[in-house]
Image 1 (cartoon, rainbow, N blue to C red):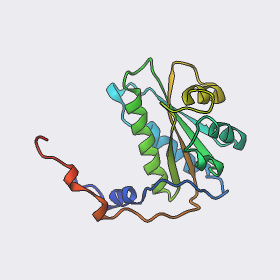
Image 2: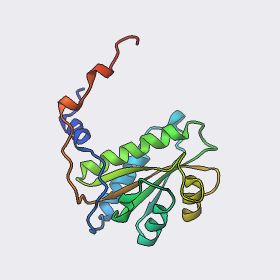
Image 3: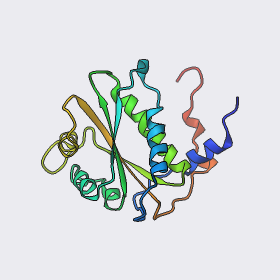
Image 4: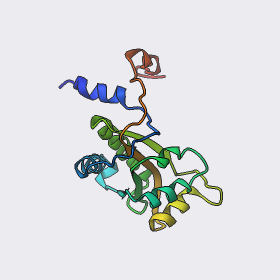
Length: 177
C-alpha cells in the first residue's frame, strides 16, 4: 500500500504557527485532535500518555509564565493541550508523549489549524523548573512527566509549505553509517 499524497502534503504544510485568531475551535475539531493523540502508539501498548485540554484564557496565561521564553503562541492561542505521561507506567514516556504530540500537530494541520510545540521538559521559568510550574497550574501529580504544551488555533500567520527541495535525502544512510 502506498502512502497517500494527501498525508505527505499535510506533513509539508505543517509549520510552527505562533499567532492565532481569536476564534475558538469547535468541539468537533478539538475532539479530532485529542483522538489523534490518544490513538498514538506507545511502547508495549502501555498508553501512559494523558492530555489536559485548556481553553480558559486565564489558565493559558498562567501556563505562559511557566517558562522563560518560547511561549509567545500562548498570547493568542484559544486552546492549549498539555501532553503528560504517567512515569510509573513507562520508562520511555518521553518518546510515547512525543509521538502523541506529533500526531496531534498533524491532525491540527489536516483541519487547516495551526499548532506549535512548546517544550516544557528540561526547561525553566524565572523561579523554578517548568515541569513543576505546569504541575502546579494544572494540579498534575508529581509522578507525571510534563513533556510539552501544544498551542492550537486558527492561523493568523501563513508560512510557506516545505517543498521537495527542503527534504534532505542525504541524511538517509543505507545499511550502515
